[in-house]
Length: 94
Image 1 (spheres, rainbow, N blue to C red):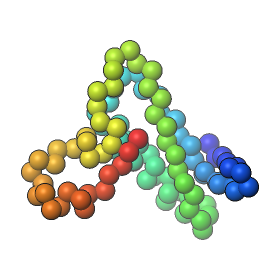
Image 2 (cartoon, one colour):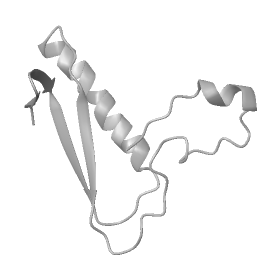
Image 3 (cartoon, rainbow, N blue to C red):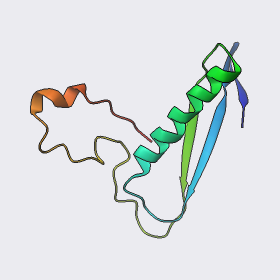
Image 4 (cartoon, one colour):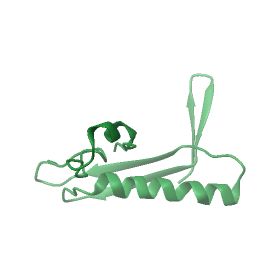
């Protein structure tokens, strides 16, 4: 859904607000949300010359605790990655 947000006198266009409903914890959710958001940008470029922020919210209403990471770096195995390379890997938070 497309939204226009007004904060004070400033207007911010959020072109896409996605809502992901979860009933069970999913260890891959940060990667899935990153994929949803990334897919929205090429779509925007076909419709407009401007890029607007994409916001995906994960609504979790399961009974068990969410014990998985809420960011990409916490979801992937980086043990074999050299320490010097770790800061170069982009993180993605949900």
